[in-house]
Length: 349
Image (cartoon, rainbow, N blue to C red; front, side, top):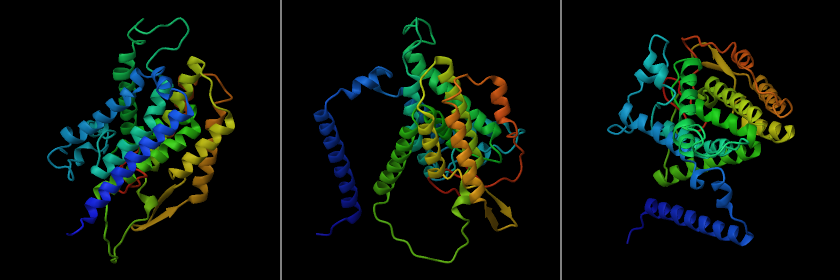
């Protein structure tokens, strides 16, 4: 009897995952405490419905707008890039479209890992003094979960498509906005969540391609850091940090100590390669400014930590000043991709 190595490998992954989950739940119960009750105090039935709604929306764009349902590996891409303000369809849709299944799944995994932290911080139930659930449309948990959270996410997607430099495509600008917002409330939890995103991506690849054979061959391959959407990622992170800082100040939420915020922002910036600042030199040469990029990440960590000290909500003028200089110039810009995978051809985020 011949042993199917691929099938056996998939079965091993599934069995190991089930055993790990069962064992972890059993150990957690032995330790005591009702973890689900903590989630139910913030989320309807303890489920991040807004995150699931957003993920379904992004998947629907790929399947039904880009034609991924009939052409999973070859969706329609060209009309949905943010080529120019004279192509408003691309600007409007680019923040939610993707160049292929790897691009799509990488951003979906990031969303499912990080967005629940933001949704938990915001909460489905009002916490302001004197307010009550169902007291108004804004305070209704179902409206918060299924309308307001997805609507805010869509707004950030429009900002990503309109202001990220170059003909970008992809949801990672919004994913990094989730990362920025999560950093403000749960800096070290965000680091763990991003590791969970990598776990989801690795598990998917282990199931889809359990055994891989490859051979070396001469080919021109651009350096990996030239395929990262540094401009879209940085813009999304900035938007998320400012939005969460405003929310925390408006509600009077307690934030972590500055050193925790700084450490979390530094670890996230390094792990997500936000230090990979580069540019072109000639037609086939790229220049990586690693030292400058690392210094910029360190300054970003200080900026995030400062939010824990200054409890005043950023004004509209403050936000405009922070975003000044990010006005897009259409034309050639660095090709890019999500940090979890490479994109071919034009840049994607």
